Length: 282
Ligand SMILES: C[S@@+](CC[C@H](N)C(=O)[O-])C[C@H]1O[C@@H](n2cnc3c(N)ncnc32)[C@H](O)[C@@H]1O
View 1: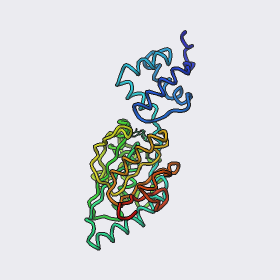
View 2: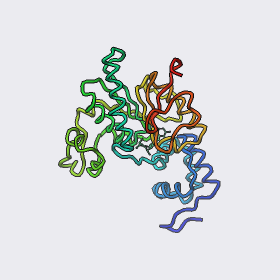
View 3: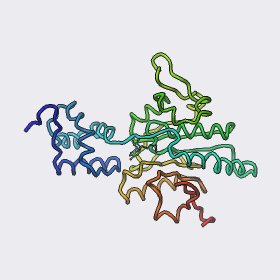
View 4: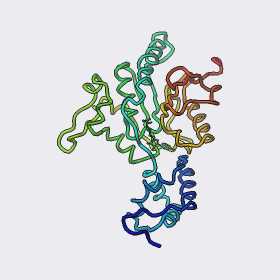
């Protein structure tokens, strides 16, 4: 039976289970609330002129492109510049000092590779670029920004955001690194080329290694991504990510993602910041 126009189609338990299974298989994201799928997919059903979630589940199973489109709707891209400011303070103060000392003692080159894994629309990798360009201006800096969502990555590559997002950027960084949009970009701001040169985007599904991002990294930010995964996958992804760190490299997680059983691989050194333990330092 067709849903009256304007009302939401019903999501039956079996259709929810099918979609839940496909979403987890494709992305690792474990959806627990049927209402989330109703909220985010109803419009897509209408665009495809489908009357029911059963029809949609069949379509998704048969059509790889539709699975990609579905994930774009289901993923949460919420982010902010300098989210969890105490982690950026730790980076700018403690880690930059430590890396500088290593350069002074001849044990490291003036070079950093950082991975923002699950970077959404780019606020996180560009915050990293601002922090590190300010503190270590003459260093070679490579920031790899990855996400499963190509739409989010396109926003990241454009390095353009609504001007309201500037509220989260410290004044000194804002003045130095962001340009106010004019003409078709009015109401937006854009990162200066000086920053854009350091950020490279790539589509990477954390649930489907190998990641193809090259290793090793001096630090990896993987924040507010793994909360959507179930424990077993979360554990496997963390193990993979830690393998991508340089010896003594740093892993930054989101606030709800503190580590439990990984204590043997890493040790806590800052606000949800962990350092990779090398065989010699355990
Ligand atoms: C809530 S945002 C977090 C953004 C940023 N890291 C932060 O903390 O502000 C989560 C991002 O993870 C991405 N994501 C979800 N599942 C993923 C997967 N399997 N592989 C890579 N990225 C994924 C989503 O597309 C989304 O952009």
